Image 1 (tube, rainbow, N blue to C red):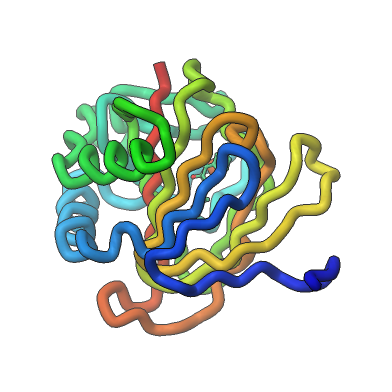
Image 2: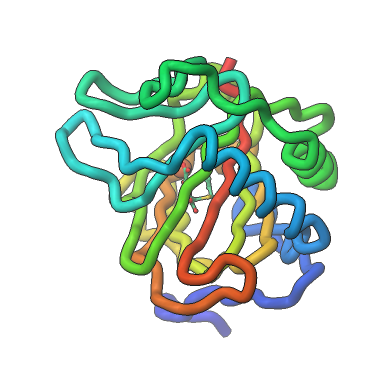
Length: 217
Ligand code: MD3
Ligand code: FE
């Protein structure tokens, strides 16, 4: 029997697990596409380099971010928003690669969200120690569309809470190739990532990359 202090730990590739109503983990779903995904992340980062954004409160985020797609998520002293222009370059974000579009579509369809067409992909880069505090994703206009997340590289401990910041979160391990579709009631749940433990991944070295596909409008 699982008690309050047990973390949920699912490491079987190909095992699909419902984490919460509307939230489904597809274990290892992206593994067969890993090389193409990583090649595209490198290509995007050449044109729109990873950067540490500043929160509206003036803090530098430990996670480095970039985007591809029609719009990208940005943060500065004015607030959070989706913008068609990369503020660092003054140019549009790189186009979303076909392998990204297909993965988001295939994963969401597998969990029952048909015809998911994201217009944004936020790419997070975690180096050892980087973390993401508990937050909700609610800058998107279409909250009926799911968010699809793809984990690559080093494993991380993901926190998944309730609808109030004070709800005690569950912990889940997210590993290279795992895909999670967050829709329905879980779409507005609080979530975060604990500080990344150091390690060495055969394809990505000392980092974790997370892709999140979003329909923002
Ligand atoms: C649950 N990223 O970019 S992915 C984010 O690992 C973000 O980089 C984390 O939270 C990461 O906003 C977590 C899993 C995830 C993404 C979006 C969600 C879980 C979610 C939106 C609603 C509920
Ligand atoms: Fe989030």
